Length: 262
Image (cartoon, rainbow, N blue to C red; front, top):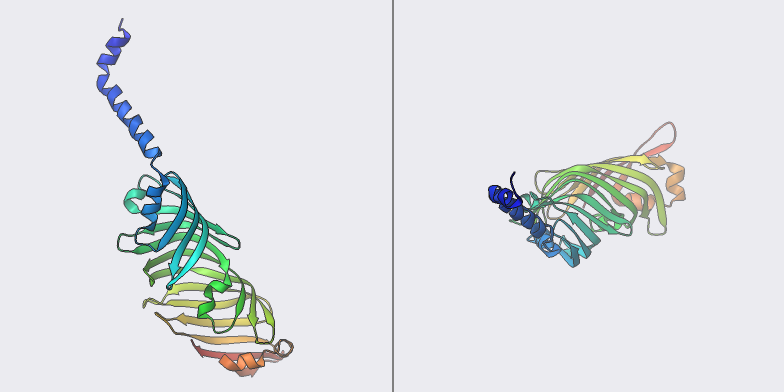
């Protein structure tokens, strides 16, 4: 009968291998979260503070990112990494602020390139105010199939966007105009192309929006509503800034042709 010392001697290499394996698992599972923060922030414009946890499952009490030269707060940020993340530099990332959330896969390239896949985003519409010629309010929600950035340069985009409880300032008052959606893509020239359409509310739209890089763009298409709505909203002066009356249908709905350079 084999004794314990005999078994230890016979399987010495196995025990050493298991010991090394358990040691590596212990070391890897306790790598500090600051290493994960380094992986995610290197060359991406993302900044974190109050980092806790481990490299595989970490959290930052406050995060921010540079967008169009301005710092945008992301609030609390958490991430999850897999062993392959150290090679691919991809992580499951979630951020949270009141009325602003993000959940998706983020990949950081060594050349400053950032890719986002299968992500859901919710934010106030004020996030887009710089690109809109009139004051707006409401809540944005988006699903991003693919987004690729290098610094502030857009390389690829595919996804959709919804603008719920949309409001526009006519100069005299805020006008409730309903909810809308857009199909998003890149234009192949570092800009954004969007097909913007009506979901609910008094104003029907069928617009094509082109946001050029680094600035400028165009909005073209049609919007329509009843004459009573436009009069009650005192919106004629605002409409005159970017649209012309095209026709009035048998239901007395007024159709305006939109052609606006941004």
